[in-house]
Each structure stands twice: as C-alpha cells, then as structure tokens.
Length: 162
Image 1 (cartoon, helix red, strand yellow):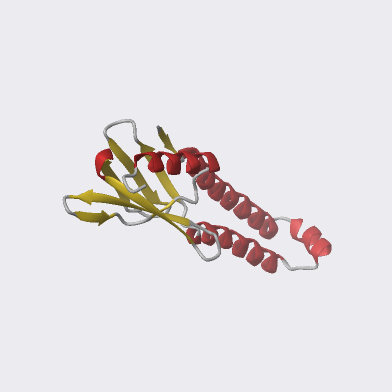
Image 2 (tube, helix red, strand yellow):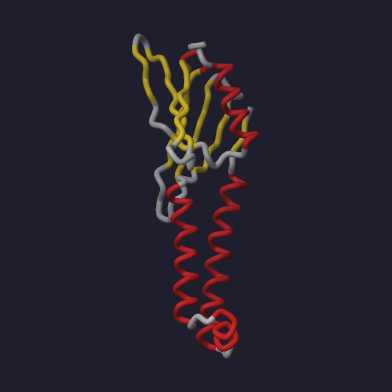
C-alpha cells in the first residue's frame, strides 16, 4: 500500500493563502473606499477595529494549524521495507524525516493522543540485533480517516509483537 496526504496539505496551504488575500483586500477596501461607512453603520465598529479583528482571526487560523502540528506524510510498504516520510508544515525550511524499516525488523507502533484531541502521534519501534530502536514520533492527525485506518492496519499486519 502506498499513499500520502499531499492533497490535504495543499488544501490547507491554499486556504491560508486565499484567506490572507481576502483579508488584505477587505482591509484595503476599508481604508481606501467608502465601504467603511456602510460597515460602521451596520456593525457599529470602526474600520481600525474591524481590521484588527480580521487580522486576529487570520493569525488564530494560522496558530491553530501550528498547534495541531499539521504534517505531510507519505507511506509505502510495497517493497521489502516500510517507508515513512514526513515533515511539519512550517513557513521556513521544515525538517524532513524519512524512516525505512525492513519489514522483518518492525516490532510495533505506539499511538498517543493529545489531551485535547488536537493531534495523534505515532511512534515506530524496530528490532536491531538484540536492542529495540525507537523512532521519533510524528503526527498523523492530518491524515483522512481512511488513510489513518490503512496506515494502522498495515502496521498491525507487519508488526512482530502481536
């Protein structure tokens, strides 16, 4: 099985950019046209307050996805190895990680949920000789329900610790 959540990630990134443009245009119109008179009459708020509210809402939207730890994930188990590639969505140069685990060395996985249910972290374990190696956890909350079920089903199939 092979999949990635690229379409979800692209959708999130496009919404961020679209909302930024929409807010910039609305704020620009508030300060350069007579639109602010109609908005002020309708809402009772000044154009400065409306601009601040729109900006705070946009920053809140960005912070939500930052707190949620939105992650690009690519999974492939069609070869003799389980290959997982992932990186967090960040504005500047996110660290990219790749795990390649031979199927006969994959021991188990551990799934942890955050206290408020914003994210789920998956930790993979591998047998290396007589030791157990633990990979750094990665967030799977940006996967669709179907992708999540496929990933966990595949990992359940290959794990040695049953």
